[in-house]
Image 1: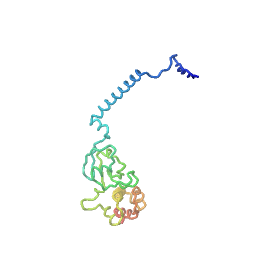
Image 2: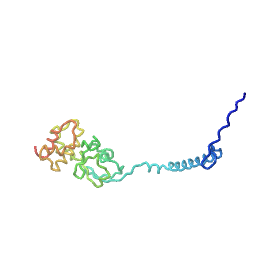
Image 3: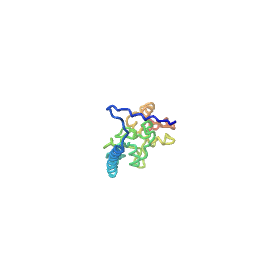
Image 4: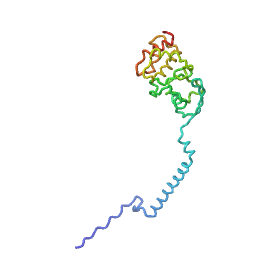
Amino acid sequence: MSTELPEPAAPPPTGDGESSQAPTRRTFIATSTAVGGAVVAGGVIGGALLADPEAATAAESPPSSRVSLTVNGTRHTVTVDNRTSLLDLLREHLGLTGSKKGCNAGACGACTVLVDGQRHNACLTLAVRLEAAEVTTVEGLAEGDQLHPLQQAFIDQDAFQCGYCTPGQIVSGVGCIQEGHTGSPEEIREWMSGNICRCGCYVKIVRAVEQTAGRK
């Protein structure tokens, strides 16, 4: 006995009354050609842009500016990335490594410098904002071989151990004295509170500032 297979069901009608059909070879080739042409065109455009090294370098380089400022009595004119901090300008561009990079967040005071006579955290100060400013670092306090009185007082009072925070402590102490905040040990501690000494030499630091201010 022979068994007949049922006829395949007709495809369901589409909304416009025609039967849906798989893409033909002709429509497939036409579609592939169009897509391939777009890819080639994009590749040519991208290649043309990448082929110009000056354009590529300009696109990748961050914005920079030229700034002129006086550091420890010497005039400097440099071109720096707009994001460069004063601390990095001092250490990386001018070779003045006395100002230390501690927390790099303005919390420890190891990078303290004087800008136009005022205390600043160099790590939080953008170099490009200091056009025509006068900056003093710990390297600029001494006069030749003659130490600044506060530098000598730190030695006299043995006001340091590891010494990492010492440059910032001394510059901040100079600023504290210039600002007139040396009326008492408590006042000195308050106005020097932004400078952290992880070795805990605070008592001797205060004594050094008092000695320099003429109290002892």
